[in-house]
Length: 170
Image (cartoon, rainbow, N blue to C red; front, side, top):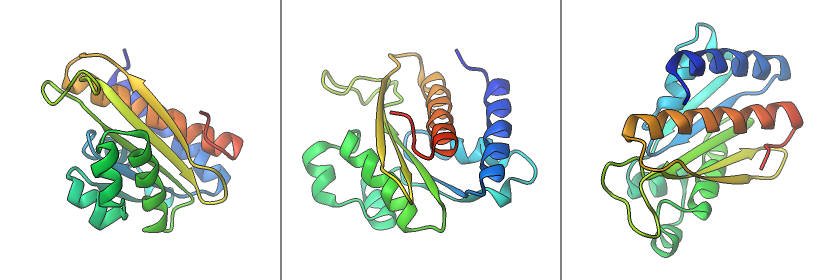
């Protein structure tokens, strides 16, 4: 399992890679509540890479701030691939960033169901000049903190792939 020290190291490397590539990053976070942006901005000098972060915990915030259609949330649920993709694309539209990562999931301990169990997290990664990709992770019921930290690690992987390859790895 990932440690907070490992995440800080990864954040430092991600910022360096983004800086070298000349790209700005935005985050759109639900179940992580701003942890991705928090780890990135804990590093001095991150303001030349981190354009902004959105914490859109409620469905209303996803709609009002990121432009996620309410009908999309109603038909698929907030924890879904279409919503994660729309969140990432909405973060790009509402920012000046080149890349955006989104996270929506069930961190627990409650809130899960048979279809959407605790530990299910959907990610989107959008690049202004490329395709938006989605990743689904089923971490299991590791505890709220662990699910959130593992989600930060996946978000960093997606952003790193988008920076390194011109498109996020699927």
